[in-house]
Image 1 (cartoon, rainbow, N blue to C red):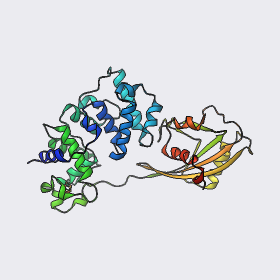
Image 2: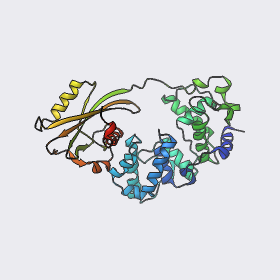
Image 3: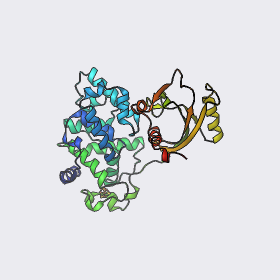
Image 4: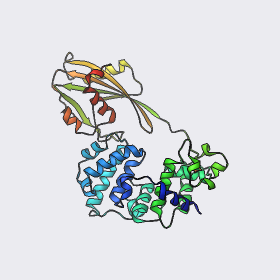
Length: 353
Ligand code: SF4
């Protein structure tokens, strides 16, 4: 039996049941693929259900406002994926007259759809013979075939794509791709793979050579940038000063408070920026209530976030600022630490540090 037959046979009995697996609706499969990128399935499931309920068709998603889409996405991170999803839904609705692209080549034209997603959708929904190569697939193939090339090098990416294209099932590419992803997620895991339950154990070279922990090979060295964000939550009479983030940075198009960023943090730094911020107000007209600290990790950044809650005794005004009550803020998409901050604001018993 060849590699793909082993995988497909195993999948018949071991497949995981998810709502997106009981449909060939390309819109829903696309939603699931975008949501599940770099997200645990258990977390992604919740978001998939929320999105399909709020936007059952691509037209519903296209007609939603960006705020609605980002709000539903809130907490999942990688907000550019949500913006691209929305952009592509509008493109399909307006430019393609609502007809979802039905081939690998056409899917690749959608913003936010790369080779992996296009291969997954076209193989699952349209039976196109395309190999979807994600992190799970890299791991399984590097172990079974003992590939030494680094998976994050350009040589590795092309070598693994060629190998995967040679292996993909010609008769059932959709199930084959999903089977390989499941195998990587449940059996051939990064740590402690369950080799005794693996359908390809008999042909796995890394197992035979006892080098499983050395595969896949990855070039190290992605530098994590540290950032220090001082947020000022200015409140007057139950209203908060907020603005939309428009820069090409993290959390684009989400809403946050007045911000001072530095490459280090100190109390002096914080108080200087607070002083600058409240200059338009009477200097005795503010009262610093409490400060909360959050650490937030992104793929390439570690954020140290201080949110200073300050009450102002004069009304909040400013051309580029919005003055919003708590309910209005809750309707807007906000970064996860600001969401947490507001949750703690509602629980005054444990919000003082
Ligand atoms: S035998 Fe073990 S290392 Fe090899 S593919 Fe299966 S689970 Fe992974």
